Figure (cartoon, rainbow, N blue to C red):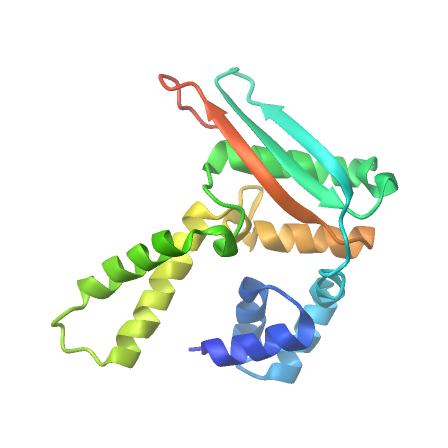
Length: 202
């Protein structure tokens, strides 16, 4: 199993996200250099290097499902108005809005989860193993795994992408960063659903 310390080291080296780093390390059998090379080949390393650049342009994109009962608005930022007007950027915004309408995430990423909500979730998982006799280190790893699954349910960027479940939404955004050559950030979103018709797009 890949430990959190190795994932952090690869993140520091490449600027890539937790999910991408973990996947790359698993593919590379825990070899840091090989994992960094994998990220470079996928274009994620290039994306990571742009993550600190300022994003002051972008779009607020709205999607309404065909039945008129579910909709989503998402604010996606980029560096220049030129990129914001491209078809590729608009396609990304559309894909993100569709994801939000279909999968109903609560937060953009794990970083946006309020501390008290996160702590409560950790407590619930830890309590499951109270008195189980399992070593604390093993319990911590199990809790970490459960949190990862929870993030994939409630955080937009950690969710499997509905159009290709082998990728996370974060990986799709990073691919767009690599392709467009600009930093792209999902700022915020809102999902609307009529209470008596909570259908999701098919």
